[in-house]
Length: 418
Ligand code: PLP
Image (cartoon, helix red, strand yellow):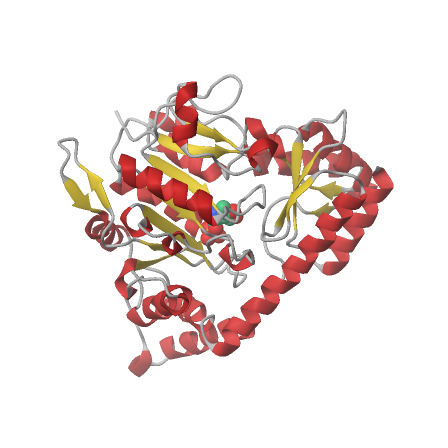
């Protein structure tokens, strides 16, 4: 008898985006005359074409594969050396951050990495996530058995939720401040900055406090910097390794999805410092770098050659300028959306260092109620804050990934439906 992984059965129904899609389809079926007018600002998927230097590099790479003398088969499971080098240099050493080429591990995007990392961490770690949270962190932990069952009011037994509310500026407080409230100290903490969904960025002092916590408790921070390219705040670290001591307590996730428009191409990477340790039950320190290398070489033959070449091209002078232009374009969208929400009198966060605007729903609307209201009356799809966790109730997220014309139209329609 083949047994099923029963942890999957704990997953609560309806991942957020399928539920949004269901409601949008139901509305389009009910009011087909409006179906063509719907503007989607819900899911965070990019809309603009790839940077030309990445396209050219991928075309050249594909042409190489068409000729026997330049053909390539299996590549290294952790990524080609030249690509790892371009990343370590361009994203870290050039900014004065100590990261070696072989501490970079290429992947098909950071969504998978957020869960894959759990393979080399032991069972029984107490996991902490922020609330609201990018749902993938939670579901990945449910799937590997790091949680108990789903709780009636939302969330899962056994996960430590770090409340992010207006009172802390939607930034997670370090657990020592929560201890008095009976919250057990977590061993593995997911932190995301710039944040999805709230669009906030963690300031240096708070990041330092988190690193101090992790070092003291021999905990690990999983620092998700998928939106790093959007962070323009000089007081908010772009990499956790800007913080002294972070190499001993943090893994960093990066993605080319939102910088180079690679959501469909698929490429990202993790930074795994050689000095990062986790512990056996007997208390013996084990370097995770070796385990992560082994994991990749066993589980994968790496990212496709052309895609790696495309990612590498983003680090050329031309590629960097193109990435900057793409990010600037979406950030101007974010500014328009943020200003539009503020002009309507909505309390608003994010949108300045992240492609997401987070706003409070107007009096009398809960998250899903306001989602339905905007869908029906403005034909605009947003994301209800409650879908990201209990503390997201009463808020909604608007994504800046769209055409300029659509973004301007969204602002007009929001104003018209107020
Ligand atoms: N991390 C966060 C916070 C995200 O919002 C996303 C995608 O939306 C990802 C990771 C995944 O990115 P990728 O496309 O690299 O899998």
